[in-house]
Image (cartoon, rainbow, N blue to C red; front, side, top):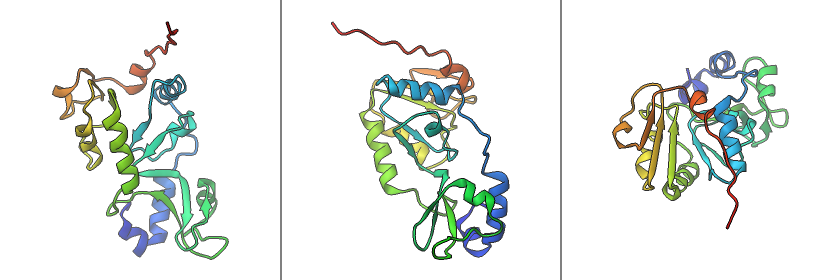
Length: 195
């Protein structure tokens, strides 16, 4: 249902499924989202690379978020480019149409059969290559091409947090097979005085 073919050939069915299964208006950031935003504000986090499309990192206050698969919080007209909030999709029925030109309004998410945005992918590679510590969390490291991004890391400290084992577990300095929120809730952000 989340294939680009479905959006093109059966858009009414696509949006019916999308509204019911992909948009969670009551979703709120968890302890991991909030801690990452805190680390960024403290100058200890250069950025976040995520496959999630829920927009919760930004809602938690993170500023530098590379959303490889897009976000359900952004939508645009495929003809004129006018942007629309998620509420617009939820308030319409059938195929959402642009109020300016009548074009179809689609979510800014990467569907099956579509390529990732090359600029976002390049930015993610750059961020990972420059890191001295990489925390990979909440992923089995099996969805490509995002899973291969960890191989771009050349820094000193790789930390993996996932409920199940991943193919990269043997290469990590620290591995936690626990929930992200439980691990991140234990991180204490300290300010260090210079001198």
